[in-house]
Image (spheres, one colour):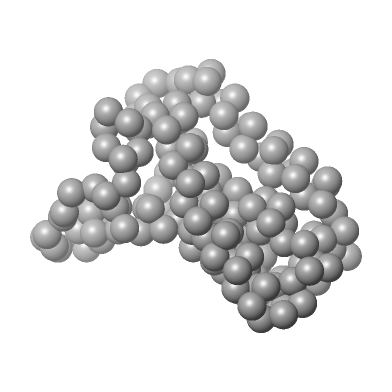
Amino acid sequence: MNVVFHVTTAIGIAVALTDTAKTDTKKAVWITGAAAFVTGVLVHGILDYLPHTYPFAAKVDAVLGLLIIAVTLFFTNRQYIWIMVLAFLGCVFPDLVDLSVPIVNKYTGLSLPVGDKIFLWHQKEYSGSIFTGHSTASDINHVAVIVITVIVCLCRRADLKRIINYKL
C-alpha cells in the first residue's frame, strides 16, 4: 500500500494507544511508543496483505508521506513526540527494511546487493499488491483506512487535542 496510507494509520495508532492522563512519565511514554512501533509494524502487514493498488506515483507518495509526517510532528506536543515518531517508524519500518535498497538502486543507478524480503507480506504469495488495472476492493480498503483513522481520532479527540498542539 502507498506510504501515505501507512503514515495515516500511524496517527490513528498513536492516538488510540496514548492515554494522555497516564503517559505523564518518561517510562510511560517509551512503553506507549514501543507499543505504537510494534502495532505499526503489524498494521503495515495487514494493510499490505489486503488487496490494493497504488493510487499515488512513488515520488508523489514519498513527498506526501514525508509531508504528513513533518506536519504532524511539527504540531505534536513535545511530551508525546516519541510516541508519534515511533508510530510513524513502525508503520514504515517494513518498507525501509525490505524495499529501501531496491528503491535506491532504481533512482540512483547503483547496484547495491538486494537481500531476501524479511516481511512475509512483501513476498509475492502474501502480498495484496495489484499493479495493473482497477480494483474496487482496493478502493474500499483505501477509504476504510482513512475512515477508521478518522473515527479513532474522533472517538479519542480529548487525547488527540492534548497530543496535537493545534486548535481542532
